[in-house]
Image (cartoon, rainbow, N blue to C red; front, side, top):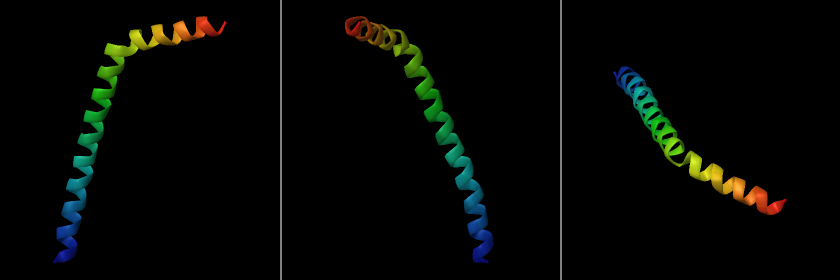
Length: 51
């Protein structure tokens, strides 16, 4: 009885973790898209200053 209950919970947990991981990936991609050019410019400024 307990084994089948935990098996169902484990499968559900995997789906929830996959959804959370997908949401985190979407947020990271969105942030990098929005800030990518700005970050690239900052790195270029630092690189130019070091030369």
